[in-house]
Image (cartoon, rainbow, N blue to C red):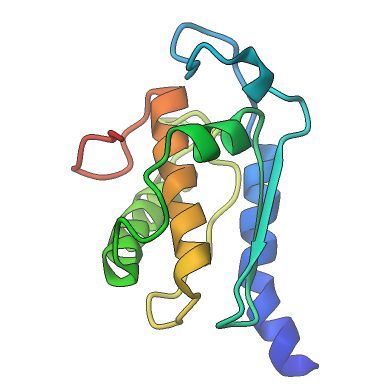
Amino acid sequence: MKHLFKKIIPFIFIIVLIASCKSYNNNQTINNGNDSGLVKNDTVSISSDDSDYEIIIIEPGFNAWLVSTARPRGFHSQQWLESRNALMVQTWNQRNLQPMTFDPSLYELRIDYDIYTDYGYDINYKLYNYFLYFQLKYNQRLSPFVPRI
């Protein structure tokens, strides 16, 4: 039980962080011409058979975007996704510590992502795609790479 609790804590932070992100209806919002994707309680949940970790993303429009726009599973390797996630988590956490410089409503909580932990492919895939969606929707840059599909 203690081992399971220790593994779940980092993702509780991610869940709260993602749940607390505000949605803004401005010109930088991603819209693929499908307004049905902008559902108020859009929730994506995934758990990995390879590990005891789970990620829950609550962001209006993300589920529709993930299904219709994101690259398919298997397009990137797990190692590639992990390296990108590590970069973007580091930037996210730096911005979280600078609320006077970066919008604190976007970076409310720190993400506890351990680069030495194997979270499995599905969790890294969802986290990477959430970061991609976040960058495009809120016109942010979390890495030196241009966010694109």
